[in-house]
Length: 162
Image 1 (cartoon, rainbow, N blue to C red):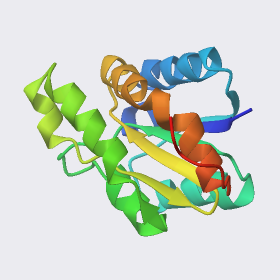
Image 2: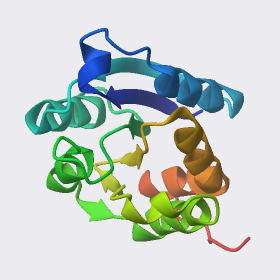
Image 3: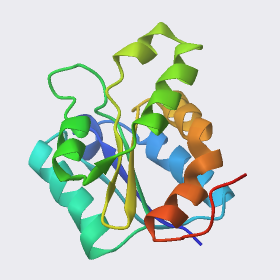
Image 4: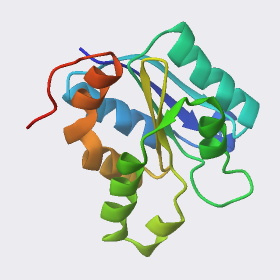
């Protein structure tokens, strides 16, 4: 059973000025894959807050999977990947590359995504875009590898052969 947390990074959402559809959609997808969502919250686009929440979910709550939505683009307030890079121990570029490649087949805007996927401790952290459609699509592209990745992060030594 995968334990998960979802963090929506949105200034407007954190002030109650925007409904967080993306976060709820991610939770729905995670529940469909039998993950247990332990934590969910909406926070502002503030690097130190993002870092603090990621660290709380990984080091404190020891969640298997932490997904962020929002703040992955090139706007001045898009700081999620920057915060993620500062706290992860290992990057998993292949997952982010797959998300960009598959999204690029649907929209040219995918090429400006700065989303990061990485490991902190025994937790997998995934940055997803802020749009509901983009978040769900990007997550769907990497779902086939999620359970295996989490097992390996937790120390599973069985062979990786399919």
